[in-house]
Image (cartoon, rainbow, N blue to C red; front, side, top):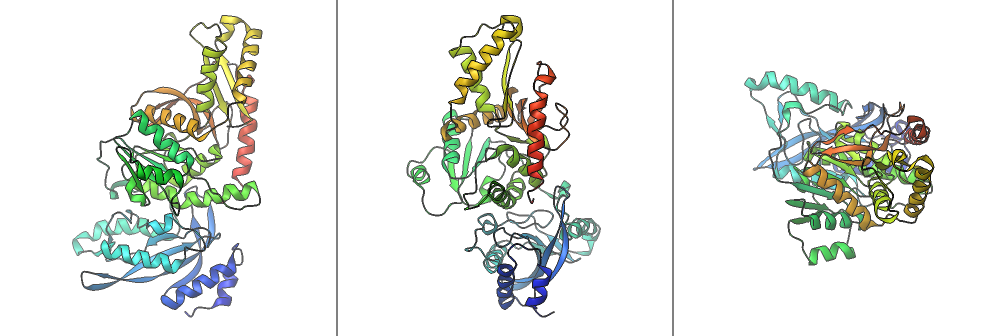
Length: 472
């Protein structure tokens, strides 16, 4: 069909930036006139559905002297051009997928161009050009023989679902298993927090290899210094594939857009994570995803939904720093009398709504004394800001427990549904045992349930209401 701008405008009536999207697709049509478009239903990993533009066609790829027309499908999000398309191969019945650096077993395409997407620099024509360049190095499809037909039928069932919009299919036996035994850690984000995490993890000697993924442009002061004074076993890269086979992937990135509202700021973070998280999960399928980006409870939820990882392997930094500080204040600053059985934690929502719990102290000092000590401890804690370097030390503490399977208890953001009568899918800090597979157990605190449940339920309710306004 001919490229009809008015028809396309009608189809994109609900798109936020319809005119920008139409103009860009019109430009794509000048270079690649055989692409076709339709409005179809896309199903996201959290089972939510959205009507999105399905932009389908073939791109010419020269490989070993021959030209191949590679069929692809681009799902154009309704926040385009500020968010990248979701890209898949669309093989025919006689084609097989060559799983590699830029393509997974279901045909989803991962490219640096997508991961570094930034309007107005990033455009679909540029994306297709990089796609062609990468596929010329590693052809993503091959012709199948008749002996492969049975396996191909099964594979095409996966591909059909995905290209129709279902994106939560597990790779099962199609993906190559990870066999790397080294302790590899990836930090995502070259800002102050990312550098602080890198330095803290490096100082503790936790990782055999540490990768810092920096997607910023130019040379920031801290990042340039890391380049100059290179650290042992630290690699700085802009290529997402450098993170492959990591045991822990730490997300520290935050959007710095000029948004007018808090919702807009968080939505910008979500849009950025939409490009990052699936790729990170693709390259490190058995990793623990540790979220330090803000707001940590919401961004941990977003990471869990976008990655389709088990909830035990998606955690947020939560109140680990506050808990460690509170325990130190109680023991070393206030020198509180103890019986050795106390459990001192900060749980719930990071910020003003966090909840201190102090169980076991009643037997040692009496209830009134406990309240007074707890109030004094929290007053001291309130003046402590969360500087990047202190958060970096807290992150290194969590990574140490995971990589070295220490089975240590930390207060981290986990899926709170089913705890303290919380029925919604929200992440809150709870005391958890951390090991090589993430959270092995959520600790049930010994304090009376009604002393903390109301605050936690209030936090859960407000977070859940906010999450419903986001577009995943």
